[in-house]
Image (cartoon, rainbow, N blue to C red):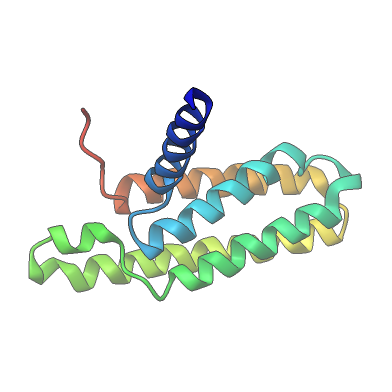
Length: 142
């Protein structure tokens, strides 16, 4: 009996943890997908033997990035009405630039120019960080 209770509590806590980690919005879900693939890409982009896998990761990142262009950041709602259109336009411009850099990365990897690809991934990381600072709604600290 105690084992059933323990297993039930454990299962409930695992399920609730997975819901908490899921994104709050569809855009958060896309960004989580991008982040997961990007972390893996950073680990392996220097290795020519991993180029096929890296290209697959880039395809996932690009797919999620293009889908995210159809969504507005949740921070948009917190802005004054007069600033929202410019904010969303700026977000879409920067996401489009991110996708363009992904296309350049694909060319570099197909040419087996992994040293250039490593630099490009670092640039993409910088774009990602600056975009998160600018467009991501900061979660309140407990």
